[in-house]
Image 1 (cartoon, rainbow, N blue to C red):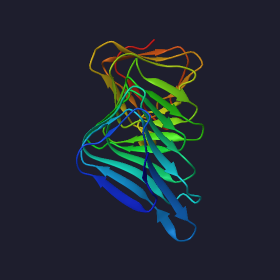
Image 2 (spheres, rainbow, N blue to C red):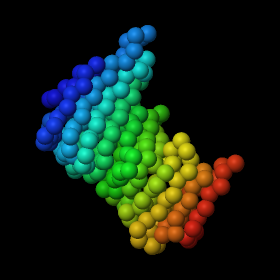
Image 3 (cartoon, helix red, strand yellow):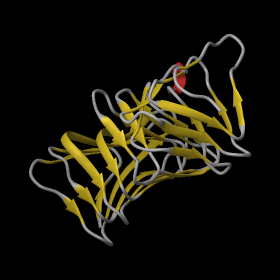
Image 4 (cartoon, rainbow, N blue to C red):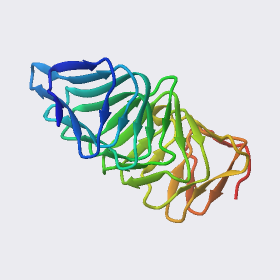
Length: 238
């Protein structure tokens, strides 16, 4: 069990692996009226997580940040691996490219800093608790048939969404907000004829979004185009 305490910053300059049953906990906290107690771990190169990466808040006023920075390469969350943001009100941040084949458990809101990178959960699970959000800032968000999306929170994708394969949004899928706060994303795929299916009982909101030329939208549920927005479907619609 490795702990990065609140109000400290540590770095790993060579190799790192997190084995099955092992935990790395990055803490944050705060003290009312005096400021943030951030916890930061910087890892020089990509690594594989087969255990638990825990970004944990002990704060009460929302000032602190527990943060993992990957300077180069890819953080691979292997099958059985868990990346979990938990605690109270502080921020949780992972900066770096993430390939998720395990589980990302969002029990407090988590931001992925993804500029120029790919956040790939096309073969992984994302579970977002009620009232919480997973936000992918910049870069590309990759989803597909192997994406398991659960919970009643909100998944804010980047402005570019890449479907690796067909994707079905079920009634139990979190709120999917293409483009996050900007409400403007392009959803496309490498393979023509890839389908994005909105299942019965599911609502998908398209606000200034474009469904690209390689993606057919299949609506079995409810699709909303809000007032004062304009969206486009460039391929098939049924």
